[in-house]
Image (cartoon, rainbow, N blue to C red; front, side, top):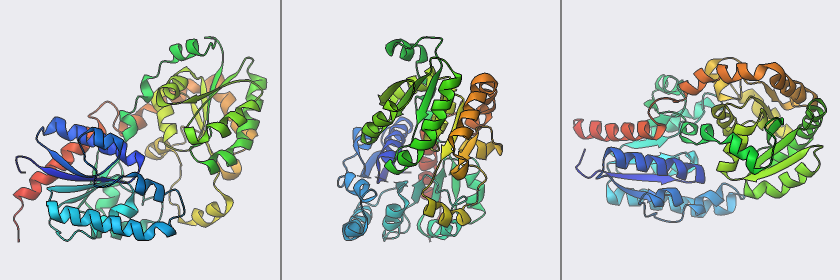
Length: 388
C-alpha cells in the first residue's frame, strides 16, 4: 500500500451515502493519510469528498421513470470511469446501486485497479443467475449477512462479511421513558408502534389491514396509544390514516423520535424492511406484515428462493418474529398476533432475537470498521501481489 492511498468511492443514493460516510470515517481512523475521490452526497462530503457531480442526479433516476434519463446516466457512468482511469486510485469502492456500479466497473480501462462492491446483492433470494455480472465486474464484495460469503465464494466471487449497518444505528439507544414524558403518555399505557412502510404504494396497501388490526387491539387494550414514525414524503398520508384510528395517535418524524418511540412501545406492527431490524435492536416485540402489488407478487414468487422475509428469521432459520405476507396480511391475523405478544410472548421474542443480532455484527467491531479493514487489506495484498 502506498503511504497515501487514494480510494475512489461511488455512492448513488442516500442509503449508500450514509454507508460511504461511515466507511470513509473508519478508513481515516485506520489510515490517517488516506485520500478520497468519487461521487457521494452530504455524508461523504462531510468526510472530505469533493463529489465529481451531484449524487442527487443518480438518486432521482431511481425514482422517476428511468427511460428518459438513460442517456445522461450512461454519460455519467463513462465520466466516472474516465476519472478513475485518470487518477489511478489504489482501489475503487462502489456502494449499493448495482446498476450504476456495474456500468462504471465495466467501463474502467485500467483493469488492475481493485474493484470492490460494498453491499452484496441478495442474489441468493432473487434471480441468482445475475452472479456472473459480479464475477465479471468486481474483484471483491463486502457482505452484510453472515451466510453470503459462502454463497458467493462457491460461485467464484471473493466475498467478505463485514456486518449489517443497522448495528451502527442508534436504534438500541432510544429513550423510552423520556419519549413517554415528552408526549404525555402514562407509564402504564399500552403503546403500539405502527410503521406502514417507506413508499407510497406500501402505505396504500397496508392501510386497510393495519387499521383493522389496531381497531381490534384497541378493544382488547384500554387506553391504547398508537405512535406512527414516518418520513417527510409520507407524513400527510400517515396523518390522514392516524385520524381514522379509534385511539390516541402520535405521528413522528426523525430518527431520534423514531428510536424513542420504539423504546417506549410495548409492541410493534411493521411493514417488512430494515425497520424491523431496528425494532429488534430496540427490544420491541414485533410482528411483520407486507403486501406486494398483486401482479408483482404473481410474477416474482416463482423467482424467490427464501423461506422468510425477515433477516433474523432467515439467519436463525426459525419464524421468531411472526410474518404475515400477502393473503395472510389481514386485520384478524395481525391483531391476534399482537395480542399474543402483549399478553405473554413479547419477552420470549426479545430473548430469541439476540443470537440473530449478534450474527449481524452486534457486540463486535462496527461494520464500517470491518469494511475499512477489508478495503485496506485488499489494497495491501494487491500491492504485494506479483504483476504479470
